[in-house]
Image (cartoon, rainbow, N blue to C red):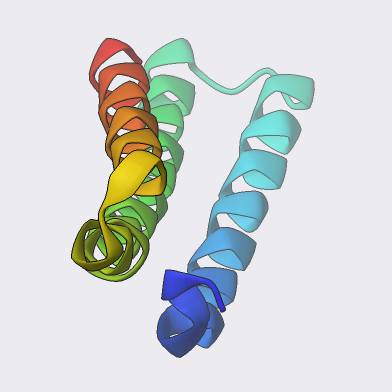
Length: 93
């Protein structure tokens, strides 16, 4: 079972909201809206996706990584490497 299972409904709700924001941004571009107004909405959509990413990362650390660490061995090491790589990707983006 994935660590986010308890937060799945909230994650889906946030993703749908972000999807709506992106569609709104598309309409703004199509309607030739002022650049700064579009950038404001891009920032809001980016923040919404970052919130989802951080929640997923937290769930992964508290569930998947913690469980693997309790078991130990190569699986634990792999989960830690995965988490580190995911954090690095989030920081770079």
